[in-house]
Image (cartoon, rainbow, N blue to C red):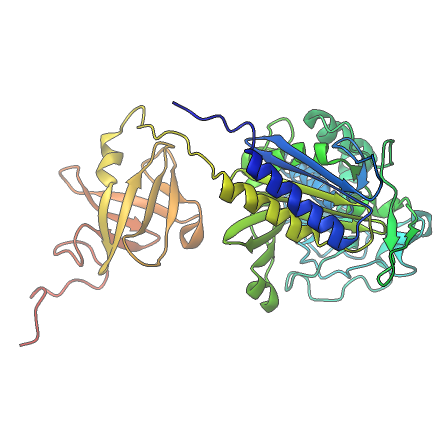
Length: 461
């Protein structure tokens, strides 16, 4: 018997509505719209508004600010996957003459390129992009504030450079490439560089009085790849589903997983807050779960997209005010509400279709020195190694087709595990990056580096 997870329970839906209602009321937002995604599809939409008898739905556009950066990062990863660049390449190799070419593409994606956070000159978010027609206008005379690669420093000019890189290698405007390679394949028909009706107007709400002021909606020009896009909760729900699982028409699951992996050195405060940054995605540890996504803001608008891959739940929250509700907290709470009220039902356990006797022989208890580890063979074709108790180094390993295995995460990521056979064909020991794992602690006769005392184990006499 199986249980359908397509619809949320009434109590869950009410809790979600209550959370966004509190956010809109206490944050004094003219309107707020949200969506929740589970199992790859939107299962809930909600909205609150200050206008009686009218509420935005999942098709109303809001400006999404820096969530645009995640779209730009996907375009760059596509170029990498096609072999047109390497993430370790300096920008100068593909886009010469910028004055910031020593930063690598990976460093620009992770905001570790040492560039300034903002463009010089007047506040770029509230002034026309025509004031910055060239990359030199965006970067200024001194683009670097920090040594390249040493620290995470969020940079809008850095993503402007990545957009220019996309244009250079594709030979087309960033907006055209975006539409052709992401928006159309994923069916994001309500996402665009320029606003399309129906759309929300952007407002500034007075901090000490219940009055509002309209905000300008400027075309960011050269800086569009850092924050130009307009979208809807419906489109961003579909984008969140893609970021969780990948889509081979756009970007593989493996490359999307790479985007979700921390790629930037964390500041001390970030370590304390459980925050990091991947390749175009923010990463945070909140409410005991790992969340990935991105926030966004431009004058008149706030946006947040957040995903818990482990819970198979994502949330999108959009508001049309310059400041007010903390949408990152709202999005995390929407994920938590669903994950706790209706926890993910795991897929049924199924055995391996075929069992390789040699691989099965690896399963069981092994010792590194005196520390006990267990090797498990799983139905996904991998093996896992981890301590039997307490904390310690652990990893999954994928087969290489030649009897060896490569670590996928943690200390052993990229390291080679090699089962070594005895003359009779049985497995003598495991060699993992020069560490020897034996069936017994410091097993007699095993090739333990440094040797094993021939008198064996003893007490104090």
